[in-house]
Length: 602
Image (cartoon, rainbow, N blue to C red; front, side, top):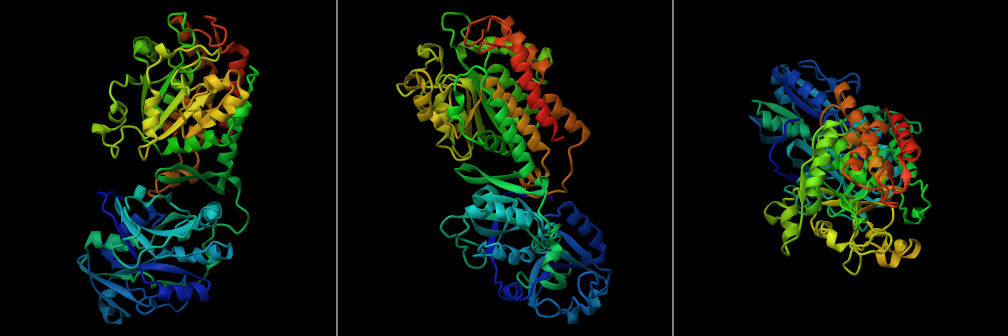
C-alpha cells in the first residue's frame, strides 16, 4: 500500500443498521466496492497486497448482481441499506438503491470485502465489552482503522480471537497510543461522535474495509459505488465461517500481548511459541556458575519485553565499559564489549541504525578493537563510536535529540551492557566497593534524560547490580548483593536484564531478536498489517543467522580484547576468561545452548 504524508482523518460513524444485524443475526457481513471493469484487476491486486484492511471474499463478473459463494438470490443493487455514490473521487450522494444505475453497472465489477463486525459477537461471548465500534482513522497511507477500547486484562483474549479471523481483518495492527499511528486526538473525530474510553481501557486498532472508500477517492474514477459506512452487505454465511479454525490454536498461532512502553502507551505481540522460546533463552543466560546470587535480581520477561521494544525501534544506542581494574591500563574488563558487539551485529542485520557511546579516554582503544572485530569477521560492518562528556546541563538532551527537540529523537532505544552505573551518592563503584568515578564519563545522564522523552526506551544488562540500568532492581541489589547498599546503581532502565555474565545477556538479546524476526504474528503487527506476509528470503535468513554469536566468533572477540590488554573482571587475568570463568568450557557451552535453543525456531 503506497504511503502518504501523515495526514490523519479520524471519525465515528452511525452504525444503527449494522448494530441491529450484529445483535440479532449471527451472519458474516461484507464491505462493498463497485468499480468500472477497467480498474478491476488493479483493485484486486491492491486487495491481495494488503489483506489486512482488504480481505477479498468475492469478485463479481461485470454486470453480475449476485455473489453465489456468499449469498443466494443476492442483488447488490438493493441489498445494502445505503450506498455512497462517487464521481471523480468525490462523494456526491447517498442512496438506498442502485437500481437507477443498472445500465452503468453492466460494465462494473463488485468487490465484497471482509468486515470486522463479523467477530464482534465472538468478542461479546468471550466477555469483552464492545463499548464503541465506530472509530476509524486514516494514517500515512490510504488505510482506515477501527478502534475498540479493550480492558487491559482482555488484550490477550481479543488478540487470540481476532487473529483467527483473517477474512475479517485478523488481529489488531496496533495497541496503545493513537499518536503512534498519527492519530493525534481520538476525542476529536472529523466525523461522528468522540470515542469514549472507560477506566482501564486500552485503545486497540484494526485494519478496516472502509479502506476501499479511500482507494476510490484516491483513484478518482468517473463513477464508483461503495456501501455506506455501517450499512454493509449481509451474507448467508455464519459468523463462524470467518474463523480460520474453531479448535484451540497451536502455540505458533496463539498471540500474546506485552506492554513495551508507557510513554507513549504501546503494546507488542508475539506468538505463544516464540514467547516460550525467549523465556527459555532468559533462563539460560540466568545460569550462575560464579555463584554470585544474581537470581535474586531476576525479573521475568525483561529480555522478552526489551527485545519486543527493540524490534519496533529504528535507531539504537549501545553503551558498555566498566573500568574495574583502576590500577591497570587499560582498566576495562572483558565483560561487556563482546555482548555489545553481538547485539550490534544482529541489529545491523535487521537493518537498524546502531551506534556505541563510550568513555572518551577509551575511544581510541575501542576504535582499534572495532577495526579488529571487522577484520576477523566478528561483525560485518564497523559500528560508529561516540563519546559523551556532559559539558552543560542540556548536553544530554542535545545528544539524544536533533537540535534538542524532544519530538525529534536520534535514537529510540538505549542499551547499556556491563556499563558502570552511578550509585545513590553520585559515585561509581566496582564490586569490591572501590570508587572509580574518575574513569567514568556521565553516560548515565543519557538514560536519565531519555526517561523524560516520549518514544525512547532503555535497557540495562548486568550481573551484579552496579551496572547502568539496574537501578530498576536496586532494592534487591541492596538486600542480596555483597556491598549492595554501597554499590547499587541508582539509575533505572525500562528493562533490567539479569545474566550470570553480562555478555550472556547480549548473546541472549541477539538470539531473541532473531527469533522475533521469524515470528509471522509479530512481523505482521510490526508492519501494521500492511503488505502480503512473506517469510524471510534466503539471503535475509542467512544474514540474520550469520550475525548471531557463535563459539568461534566470541572466542575471536575475546582474543582481540586480550591483545589490547583488557583483563578478566573478577581475577584481573590477562587471558581467555571473563569474570573468572574460562572461555572453554563455561562460555562456549553456554553459547552452544543459546544457539541450540534458537535453531529450534528456524
